[in-house]
Length: 412
Image 1 (tube, rainbow, N blue to C red):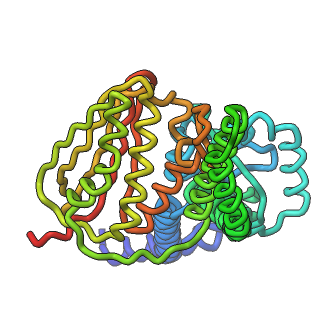
Image 2: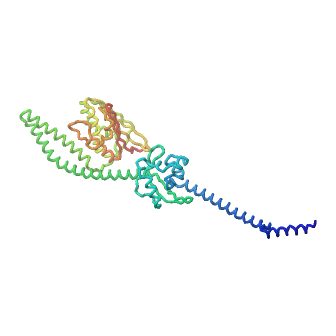
Image 3: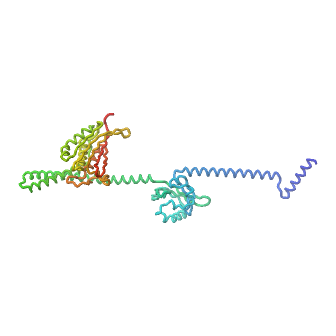
């Protein structure tokens, strides 16, 4: 058969088919190319959508705040890793659960009502709305949080997107600031009260000195034992009040210490010398153990006053006798040398519930005709004004130990 004739017949048949509603090869090829082009466009769109989804996932998971997506039924539909970490759940554990599971029981009463109100009027609500909000972790603990809300349409459904921020540290900081403000206000009140007390003490001291002087004269010229007894009682009470006034003035007045370098052992020996006879009569043995000669930059007179108060406190704790130990040593803290002065007694000790109160003004556990309850407070104030620290340790019935620490200024 003639090839040309066959080609002519096929062409004619195709033309006849095209006329009867069938498509020609050229039309099929054209439509196929168009379909391939659209398929490539769809594939490109699909890849773009996948890439956008990946970018979205990356942004969601790398967001600094915990994120949670909730639908209008208050069901959790999406979270990021930060939220799971904050509340202690995996994504699988939270998806589909009610948002109320992340809210403490006491706040759940109006929870669904609040969700319905939000979805009725979706709006942006930024963080810092001054609401006190707490979240409930998986382990039952609570965490203070700040939350921002914004509506987002996902596949035709409106969701509420919440960014949740743990504000534990911020809350602690705010509480600390409030505590410091209260302390400052209290300190200002105490300072004003102290100034008044010091002025009153000064005014009382002069006439009190006169009363004491006349009482001593009356004691000398008294004719009867009863008169001498009355005069002695007045003298004793005057001395007690004078001691109290001295402590009040010492505690209330601000001082500017005159700081010089002193050998700590010389200061201790000088302060302990007047006590030696008195302690001996009280059956108290003084033991000294000095190590590492050291210089401290202090106001000698004021430090001596503080140590004197500590020794008096230790002596009062051993009315039936005991051992008073005065020890010195040296320690390094972050490469800085410090001198430690430890004053120990074998007295009655301090109960655990009172240990944190011993430096409070006028706090005392002893019934003493001469105790003012200011000795340790005055000592603490002097030591801290001179750049030192003071710490007390005690066990009831096993004595007490007071440790002072000052920088060692002796050349290395």
